[in-house]
Image: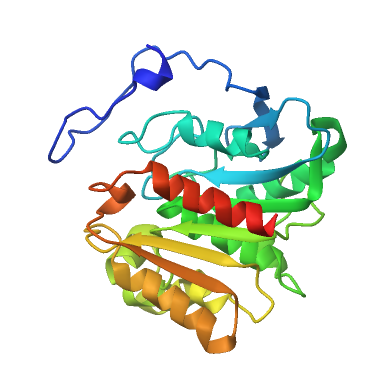
Length: 296
């Protein structure tokens, strides 16, 4: 099966558990030179962390967007966007707009508790900068874009990495171990921004922690607590019919940014459920790409 033929296991309603995929071939992206399976970090006791990178042909110093998949912190694959969307097309829109696109895997919550996944994404940002010349990337034009759990995780990495005094505990020293992790723009699609009001999510992410410990971790891992007046510009997009991630989470992130004068734009997508089901996805891709083009 070509990845472009990949579809949800059922047309409507709840999915049965996905236990495997058929053999899938992934062809090259139109207009791109691709590196697949770059090992950007190795941590003893875990699988190697890898990412794919697609760079526009003929561009010597491309701005790069780190796309981080969702999946409830527990599932997902760097090669796929949500199964309800056409596969590959979003990446090709980025390529056509002149962006390189990097798609990392990261440690999932049942492999390692947070901040492991944040450390991995910081490592991916540092790797892209370390090898920018070899990969034909512009290290000064880096943006991030994530959906759902991926939005939450990459926003933490990007906001912490862009702080004037980055928190070493949040950034970690995975992979190349050091270097810049700042970004110029964040696209935040229907993520969890304030975990302090999501007790079920706290229990899921930290099942072995006490209530007191969870409360402290929830505050520390809430993007609303990391925005600053000098934060990178954030585009928050969320459907008003989302039954998985409450719209209130987008409103909270926008309000936290506005309260201190941080640059943030909130787009509420009318009639859209999670992964923007119920509305055409292509105009929303275009909105995000235009935002990235403005700031990168």
